[in-house]
Image (cartoon, rainbow, N blue to C red; front, side):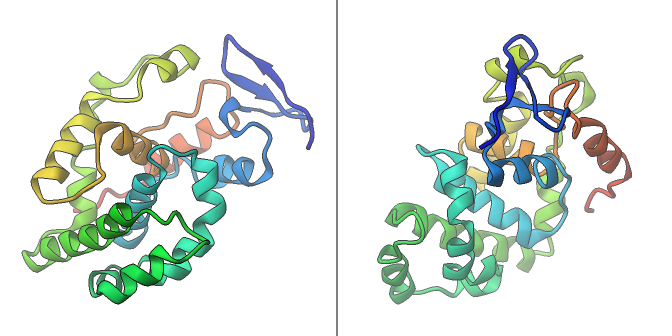
Length: 216
């Protein structure tokens, strides 16, 4: 693994390629690709949003790198996170997943993923867009910091917006959607741009967010 130089004040790493990035990727190749290509890019697709919400729930108590490395197995086990297919899972599927060494074999979290698919179905049955519902909780500029730096991110695992969305999801019957989990979801799906100032991905994500058509 190539060595990164980290500036503790800015929270940025100076990669051997000469580019500055948020330090949390740690130089791990899978994490680096995720940081550069996925994290903070706005997403408006129901299936991808549902998948990420489930995976963030599975992450609780673990590292995201663990989940990222298991993501192909999760996708195989959960039918590509196709919402209608997961909603139809039965007890046999639960037992199959509990025995699947490729994923996190946590029965309550497996049941939660199935439950959450059914909750998305219920919203659709009522004519409501899951993506539009989620994006309605995008925080206003007044709740965003003037500068995203190590001090801000270190102090904010929960925000007013993530607390509001967490409460709204729980009110609709979703599970494993606490405000910390929800904020990690919002960061990764581009509801906010939490790439640090100076990171090579910050401007690209901001450009994508400006061009992104919010689901309605």
